[in-house]
Length: 466
Image (cartoon, rainbow, N blue to C red; front, top):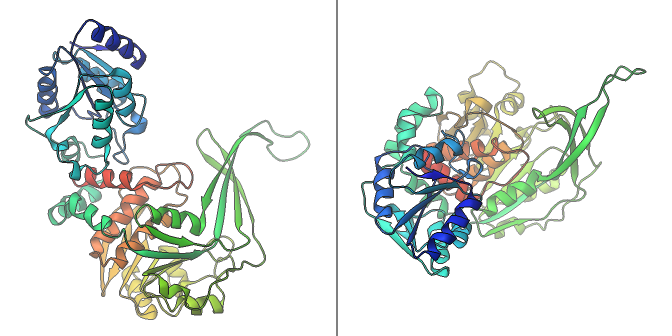
């Protein structure tokens, strides 16, 4: 039976063992669901030396999507320590094993055979780990034992997703593989993109309530701290840069600022105010859009898109359109003001408001909008119900892939960013919706309008389709 220690203790023990001439073997991983493949791998690793130490990925760095890990870091570490082939276990302190390798200086770093193909490693982590091992005088060893997938077992027996999502994923896996979907996303790298839209700054001011004011009917708040996030079209451009080499965005002036006051205890939004300029300007030459494969229009309804600018964007080779309804423009910024597009992405209230119809099926309204814009692809996002993808008169429903939402800010923008690229790449409608819902699921799991890096999305797709 192994001993569970802190990482600092493991570093001291490892140093002493190496002084004693012991051959130190290190394994590293999440080990979310311990299975026979893990046990065989650890036993094979132990045979490569005198002492086997295992570092476990901490919860905050388990990058496999909402609902993961299934088991907490302490329980995962204790389970590994219960194995007879393991000598020491510690919870790692970093996202990857690179730093722990440099500190522990193992003679052998053992990985499963599925990591031996560097090309199939979507994170590129195995290359960095191998470099770290060699830098401390060690070597990497790939075990060749029976292999299982924790994600596949979790999806089959412990899925954190609703029944509708489980049924969808079961069918989707039969038609598409994770490798195939990721390969499609990678194929978009050379797409030249121009993003046009308002530049928005989202500021979160965290406050906690004091007592009721004795003189006024209000609750004073105590200022704690604040955070600012890039938003609007700028964050859409930055999200797309994760997948494309050329994404051009020139921020219109002046920008928009939205300030939200939040109680951090349960992330309760208390009050919001907006700094809205009277007029926003963007200098764009008449034929500039023709230099790009894809033009992404993010119309937040703050006055940027006048008739002159709209006429310019109509010249785009491929025009992706997102026209938002919000508290500052309710009823006055409808997607039907545009004459054409190749792809649209709006939410259900925005679509219903555009046609002033509450009672018509969303699938019918999607067809109306596709006809009016002259495009054969579009998306209507449905919040907690997922999204609907319209394509050539057909409609596909993709259920939500998130378990819970910490903060919905920017989820629709992230969906639009990826869905636009996928539509330009002529991806199947199911795949467009799946990728859009996947990145939105990751987005609602973080506080603030932060970018989802491509590796995180690739790992989530792999976990979903295992």
